[in-house]
Each structure stands twice: as structure tokens, then as C-alpha cells.
Amino acid sequence: MQTFDLLNLNMTDKITMAEDSLVTLYSLVLINKIYTIKYCLYNYNTTNINSATREKKELHKIQSYRNDLDFVIKKIFNLIYQVNDYYYIILNIGIGNLSIHKIDLTYKYLTKNFFKKLMLKIKRKMVKIKMKKYIKLAKNILKEKNVSSSL
Image (cartoon, rainbow, N blue to C red; front, side, top):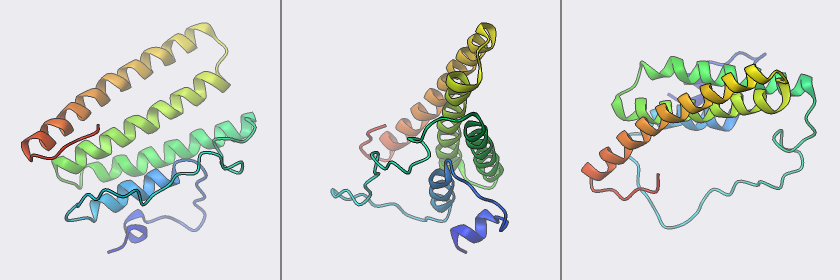
């Protein structure tokens, strides 16, 4: 089985935000073993002027990005109950990161009300606390397996 078969996307599904996270996390589920090497084989271009994260923020685009993040989070969440404990931890860390990104977009561009902003800050903090729990679990697993970690 290939990642794109597992994703089961429709021809109408167009994702601008977090598509790389979706493919990466779904690909991990198909991997039986992971080996580490000293070399960097992936270089993320943060200066790409055409990147969705760098373009001028327009409200309809921000809402579209939030919809993309919702779509990706739901897709990954649907995968959680089909995997073992190790993948469960990794997928929850991924969902946490995407959720924080969604909260940050909402906070920065879509919410002006003080109380709504306060609620978003609390929600963000709760996600961070949950992620710390999963990161600690991942570190403990790596420690048990005698694997060094940079988490």
C-alpha cells in the first residue's frame, strides 16, 4: 500500500496548508523500521516567497488555511485508532502542533475580542500541556530503546 492510497483523498481535495504534515505522518504508518544517518537529506525552504505561510494575510485565505488545518487534523485523527502505541504518540504530537498553528492563526488574524483571545490562549496552553505528556512518553520510549533523542 502507498501513502496516497491510505490517505484516500478525493480529486476535489485541495490542501494548501499542512499538506506536508499529512503526507509525512501517513507515510510513517507504513514504515517498519527507522534508521538514522548523520546527513541532512531534507532542506525546508523558509525563504520561499510563494509559500502560504509567507504571503500577505487576507481573511478569506486565513479561513481557508484554518479549514485545511481542520481537514488535516481530522485525517490524522482518523488514523490514530488504526496504529500501535508508538505511532499513536507521534500522531498526537503532530495533531498538537497543527492545533497550535490553527489557534495562532485564529488569535492573530481572526479574533479581536479580548475574552475570545483569552480563551484561545488557555486552549493553546492546554494543547501544549498535552503535547508535553506525549513528548515525555516518546523520550522515555527512546531512552528504553537506547536511542538518543533531540525532542
